Image (cartoon, rainbow, N blue to C red):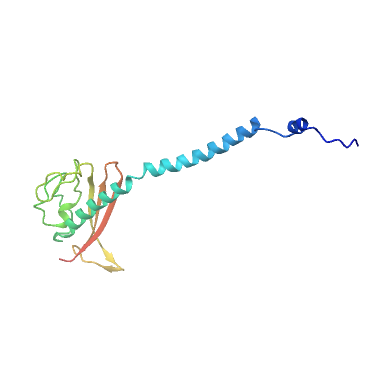
Length: 169
């Protein structure tokens, strides 16, 4: 052994400086994958951020219509088909008159049948009224209890349902 230490110039050559091309490519792949995942999540969140407001409004419309129907008399035992699409509801007297009621150009006011401002994109797609034949195994007299289902579509076409019951008079 000569006992000589390597020169500073030789030591500098031995120490790696910078990064290799392979390391750079691996870094880019990892960062790209992480960014794609983050952007996918952000896209989903942004795309559905308005949906809760539309859904809440559609549900409010459905519940309002359901309450209107539940306030009517429970006379009769079958659908009368008294209401066609967009017809005035002010003369309705029975729950059964609402069978198959719908709107096509927006939500309409009960008394004047005019379009309600801001609800032009919402529509009642169907109202179903059906007898409840039994409750807990006990037969129910025809015309004594019904289940009412109101379906409303929001401006995107997504539907919500509100279901309620009407019994007795």
